[in-house]
Length: 280
Image (cartoon, rainbow, N blue to C red; front, side, top):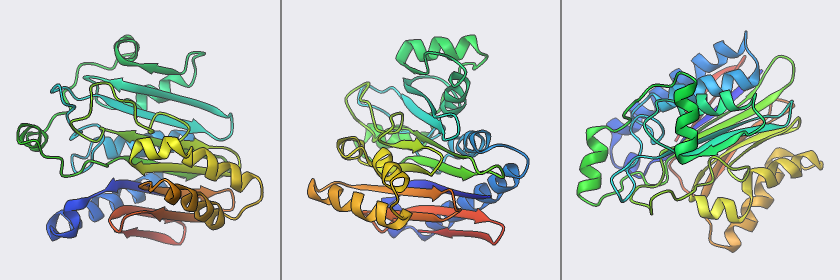
C-alpha cells in the first residue's frame, strides 16, 4: 500500500519561509491521514477522501481558497478515476459547493459521469451538497488588485490499496482571472488518469497538459512496459517540445512513486509502511 499527493506549484514559497513550512506540514499531515485511511478503505475511496482534505485546506488552490475567474466568480473542477473498474467521473466549472471531488465520486455510479456548470450544481444539490462559498479574503484581494500569486495551483492524490488497485483524483480552483468557464485539465483524462498499471495526477498549465495528454500518456506507457521513471521522462521530453509547464505525481502497481516537474517549487508528499516524506 502506498499514497502520493501534491499541492500544485507555489511561486510564493520560494521567498516566504512561513508559507513554505505551513504547506509542507499540511501535506505531511494529510498524507499520513490518507495512508491510515487506506488501511481500511479502497484506493478510490482514499483518493476522494484525501483530495477532499486538500480542498478543505485554504493553503491550496482547490475547494476553499480557490482562484477567482475574471467575472468575479469561483468555479471548481475535479475528477477521479478508478483504475480497477476503468471508470472516470468529474465535474467542470461547478459553483458554490464545498468538495467537488466528492460530487465526482458520487457520479461514478451514474451512466452520465462528467457534468459541467449548472447541471453539475443541480446534481450536487439533489444529492445533499448544500450551498458553500469557497472564497477567502486573500483571493478577493488578489482579484481586486489583478494579482495571481498561485496561478497554476492544483491538488491531487494517487493511491495503491491492499488489493493492488490504483486510483487517482485531482481538484483545482483554476489559474485565476481566466475567461469564465475555461476548462482546465483537472477534470479530463489528460490531467487525471489511472488503470491497473499506474495512476497519475497533474498540475501546471492546463492547456499544455491537455495538448500532450500527459496523464493518459504516462499511464499508457507504463502499461506498455516502460518503467514509471522512463514513462515520465519520455512524456516530459515531448512536453518540452511545446515549451509546456507541468508537474505530475505517479504511482505504479509495484508501489513505486515518482514525481516530475517543470518548476522547482511543486510540493508533494508520499506515505507508505516505510514512513512519510514531504518535498518542495
